[in-house]
Amino acid sequence: MQPRSRVTERADVVVAGAGIAGVSTAYQLAARLGVGKVVVCDPLPPLTLTSDKSTECYRNWWPGPGSGMVDLMNRSIDLLESWAAENDNIFRLSRRGYLYVTADPDRLAMMEREAHAISALGGGEVRVHWRGSGDPPYFPARPGGYEDAAAGADLFMDGDTLRNHFPYLSRDAVGGLHARRAGWFSAQQLGAWLLEQARDANAELIADRVVAVETSGGMVRGVRLASGASIATRHFVNAAGPLAGDVGRLAGADLPLFSEVHRKISFRDSRSSLPRSAPMLIWNDQQTLDWTDEERAELTGNAELAYLTGRLGAGAHCRPEGSDEAATVLGLWEYRTDVRTPIFPIPDDPLYPEIVMRGLTTMVPSFGAYLERLPQPFVDGGYYTKTRENRPLIGPVGPTGSVVVGALSGFGVMAAAAAGELGALHVTGGTLPDYARWFAPSRYDDPDYVALLAQMTDSGQI
Ligand SMILES: Cc1cc2nc3c(=O)[nH]c(=O)nc-3n(C[C@H](O)[C@H](O)[C@H](O)COP(=O)(O)OP(=O)(O)OC[C@H]3O[C@@H](n4cnc5c(N)ncnc54)[C@H](O)[C@@H]3O)c2cc1C
Image (cartoon, rainbow, N blue to C red; front, side, top):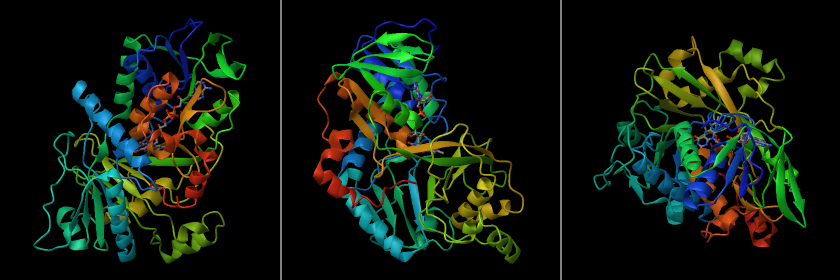
């Protein structure tokens, strides 16, 4: 969809941001709810700031408290599946699942408790596999497509049973959980399709930045753009991703957000270390990397790098991407949290590819062959912009007519379908689903919610 050069003077709704959140909201407003004139403003080409940097994975498997996250993701996946059926799956929705792996028996016991809790929240049935004759059947995922797939989760309570199905995993693994309503898709293709549908329903994309939100009497009256143009409107949606805090301030709202840098590598797996049919693989444990004595001494002597010899965070993860011929693997691991005010391009971390490969080798030992000589990696990334409890902000904030669809952290691609729908319902005053209350910015005014915040220690984020 090409941006227009002449600016509309009046709109029913102006959306700031043409990332996946903004285009999904515009699609719902224009194509589903029949709002007359929807204008999306973004100085960048659509989907190019964060939404094209993701691993493009989705899952309905989210911890509580409350069923808000599971409900939001189930709704999002319902929408993704219905769109895939509508457009012949042009965004290649797949359903291989997320496989969380652990080498720690205590962690496995925790995963088991958490699995039953997530199941009770609506995640689906848990099938427990013990190496026993009475085990339920395990249905392997199909490499492509999303139909007729298993749901819920398969919990492997011993390493041998797990390795029967996933023989490339480490001998140290003592078990794992395969979440089944999960997989990946092309976020770019989905975003392009949503934008096209929105345009067919009279939405416009304008290549410009919102620099002011005009209000009077506590209501939105219009926006001003960097070009000097103005658009009169009563409804404004802040879908500015990592810049949502800045855009919130334009509308007089101080949003409770912060941003972390997250990077990813993609490399050619020329040694076929990872089968092309693998699911998303996550090492669920913290880990200490293997270094030679010489390497260890060098790192310890460097104040900035000494932490690499200590215990590093859980969550190293990878998956195959694209065609078998390309043999691409995506690898990610935020071994050190880096919270900062977003700058672009994101700050460089020259050691990232090597540390990720080392971290992944703990889970898939055959990656170790690359440690001698790393394959040429492509590195990119962006920000997880999040609230302290790592749940999105979707709903009215600031002057009447102003709505935010943000704080989508590391789950914005999977949540975008339902987040955009929810944002659009807030704009039009439609009937809200029950889960809306979990994400409304006003939740922080509720003492019961504030009390719950203390329990939200495990955000489920990787
Ligand atoms: C390495 C990495 C891996 C990830 N993996 C996954 C994953 O597997 N699954 C998943 O679901 N999510 C994943 N995510 C998260 C996901 O990518 C984000 O949550 C999502 O892309 C956020 O979308 P957005 O539309 O909110 O923001 P963006 O895509 O950043 O879009 C915001 C847009 O707003 C525009 N904007 C800013 N200010 C203004 C202004 N003043 N006026 C107009 N426009 C403005 C920007 O130019 C930008 O285009 C990952 C993220 C990273 C970084």
